[in-house]
Length: 502
Image 1 (cartoon, rainbow, N blue to C red):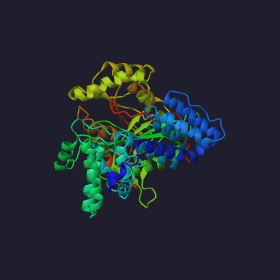
Image 2 (cartoon, rainbow, N blue to C red; image 1 turned 180 degrees about the horizontal axis):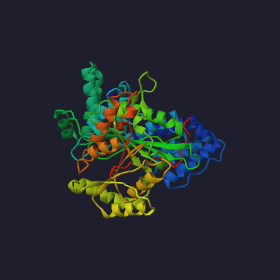
Image 3 (cartoon, rainbow, N blue to C red; image 1 turned 90 degrees about the vertical axis):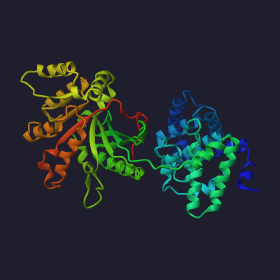
Image 4 (cartoon, rainbow, N blue to C red; image 1 turned 180 degrees about the vertical axis):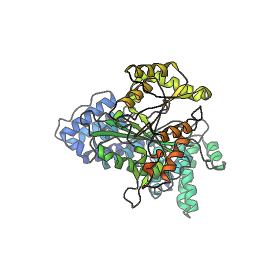
């Protein structure tokens, strides 16, 4: 009896019962589940995720209660995902949470394949390690899957993850396309037996689903590698004040590499001391580079900063700081800052959208506004009035840096944010520096501001060329650019209060 026939011996009920038991096995090993206080916190969050209260554990034996709770969650749409996500709010990326996500993917794959026993594929697919899996997943999903979660470290986990992924009418499902690609890889590596097992399973599934033509078309279609895209990838990093301790922040991040649309992938939220932010940013940049090793697009770093950090020279923070020659972020990336306050203040969004449309749709009629504060208090009022009346004013040049103690730069920036100006430029130390005025005049010579990022990068590169001993004397070292696209927004950062990072 071959592997495909053997798989039919395990019926759908047994497959689901074994998965339920496996989920409970993992939960029983979780410190959160074993301890009453943390368990209650988890159950509260789970009830909120499910929009239905969860019965607390009051008995003597934990396993029967867990079995019942898993059964309840599995009967609700996305219920098991809610279970794991709420546990992740307490434990973050613990081994238990990773194992549970693997089981959730398997559960959903079993449902997608109508209760089929998939274990005949497991040993073959688990022999394929993480190298190259993201590229195969992108190709199998027609680029709908841009990244793989951390727990997808074998071809088995990727197959489970892709099962049920959206496919257009007339397309081979991504999971079957992935198996075909892995089979081709086995052939190339001289493993014909493994390749034939996958192909046979695929043929049976395609026949049962009436997808013979789609399978044939997939196999006959010549793969054309994606061309280099000019649409940038983004790593967005957000610092949110703790609200209680002024020295601590919640750091969230998102990765966006889909050149066909805006689909940012959220990461964890961590709670850090102000002094630890640069180190965490360095870790996130390195992590993104590992995930994007085969990416052909340029990469932009965006920092979503609260008011008190807007003048922080984040583009000069380092990567590879453990080496003898750390590299400033600005050497490898275009770095922009954005305003957390504007992102969160919905009442500022209408003029923001209007000014952005002006910049995008009528670039020839767009221009910058240079702040020149007068001597009386009314200047700031009239600055905001003029910016709101002049729809073509899409860039504001500050006369002083925010946070310098004078309040001038802060109030000018506030006027700009309220009036919807999407671009703001300033010198982090001295906006009256003649070199700064010359640099900004050159940067803004394109009325449409279409080359704002590129021209700013040119001045920063001139500073880099002087090296660490000389770049502080160059204006490019001190240029700050806030560029806010209201259509390019991150998703929710997760729980409002993430656990402390240890």
